[in-house]
Image 1 (cartoon, one colour):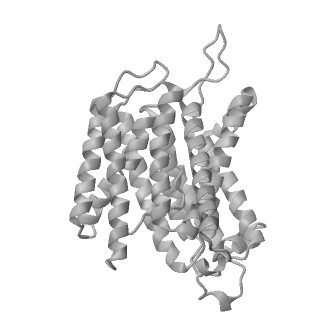
Image 2 (cartoon, rainbow, N blue to C red):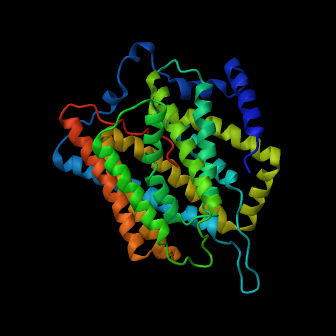
Image 3 (cartoon, helix red, strand yellow):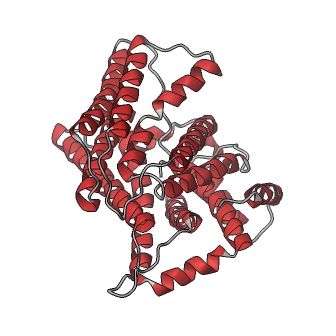
Length: 383
């Protein structure tokens, strides 16, 4: 379990980092706050990466590259996530093997590699200067750690296809919160697509076929964890949207959030004595070590593909690619791990993704007409 110790660590790290002490602080400051002269503060980041070649063939090749990169990264990540959390390691004819149960350790591995990748990128490439207080990254970081923990833990109690559909239906609680808290108004097509998503998810959950013995059945605990994932992830996206007002780059956001995530997870694992046990499990099972490392590589590479795709083609194209990725992930999981989907359940899945694509289409039409479209959720820290 994630202990209350995380909150204590948060306030300790916040006060420590605000003082600017420590051997690593200059490097962290360069990665987080940028290294360009102040005169460039007003230059939009998007203008730095304008492609010199804009022929249709070149754009098509880049779109193919982005689509393939996102699909390979996140489909591999999804398959490995289910393998690590739902299957045993070291099984033999006489022994059932043992399962890995500490989700925090996986979160730590993902965040460490993402931190290294973002740090190298920020060091090699100039980043815009901005004035965001460093401690403000910690709020998004804490919610991101908790959402990731809920996501991994949920796989112990629900099937992977159920988890994917729950992520796809996140638009429903977001709309409800916007209506109740922000008094936001929505278009008729938004209510229509939200209703279709609700119907599709209900069809899938109520008509699920028998699961393999090695796969978990959907339980109340799993649904609560999925609700926690959606709530924490929604907060992360909204907080990151507010941070982007400081004109930072996406990679700076990636570094700052993962920096605090590493501090939180290391502190929590040390307090529980689980860091050493996770390391020992890796030593006992080399297959798990390879899976965990590849899982982290896919997560970090996927983040970079997200930034590049949105920078080159915009949020609408990115949303279409990721929506298709979710559909492929369900299909791949059923093929590899034997999940049974009934005809009614398959129709429910089709309704959900048709509604998601309809939202993308309607948002694009609104943009063409000059109306204010619904903001696309922040793409940072999706995993």
